Length: 78
Image (tube, rainbow, N blue to C red):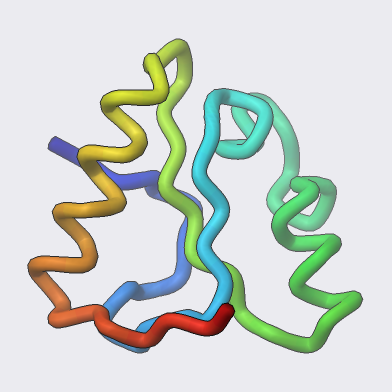
């Protein structure tokens, strides 16, 4: 299973993680035009990206939970 190839390293535990489909992935777009990159620049914060082209939400959620487990990702802000 491959998490989005256009993402920062999750071992850095980004505070913001985007989960989505090909739009979030930025398929066919230059990285500087992806909404996650634009938002990252606006908030001056790196954004992790878990997205798959054509994937159902259950695949994205499963990948997110796998990332949480793999990197002992327990930072939660409410």
